[in-house]
Length: 226
Ligand code: ZN
Image 1 (cartoon, rainbow, N blue to C red):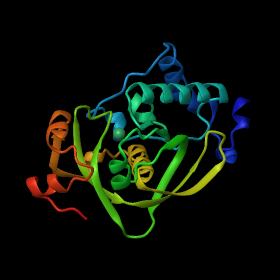
Image 2: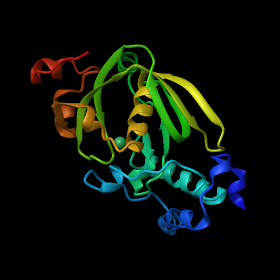
Image 3: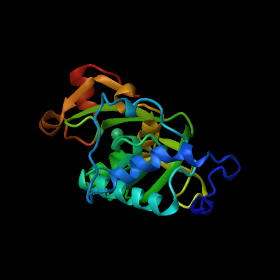
């Protein structure tokens, strides 16, 4: 069987009938070319029932799905995309950030380029106690941004697209992306962790809070930064 090419829990494989529904859902999504529709907050798929990836998709379908996630992320455009955001409740996400930002922003936010990565069954834990707060947005909450305080460094454990184990520390903006996408796979949206007093439309962001850090927003809107 094609799933023998994967190492995900080879000793605990579900029966083919258990696997079929999600594979069929993905097949159906991929019948049209181009970017996939992104589901918005209020869709239950973003909140519960997201399954540990256990070789649900055969190698060819997995590759096609990851490519569709990549195209959808690029088209949006975004710097990360989790499978539930296209309606697929599996613990799979992609990240990539070319970081086309001014030097001032790069330094303030640690926004360095992040090459394309596939995260399968990711989880993270904070490294140290330092936290940083910045405006953040989500493709599933279009039009809005809010400040989220997060650990500045995290240890990510997951598998890559070939099922190889990954255990790596991320810092700066890539650490934020990893946390945001992994949170999606735990049924969390950034708004669950956000300082809601900072909630701003994209238009207001451009008009008022285009600074590299949210210090002015914090002073003007009345919330604390770490
Ligand atoms: Zn998101």
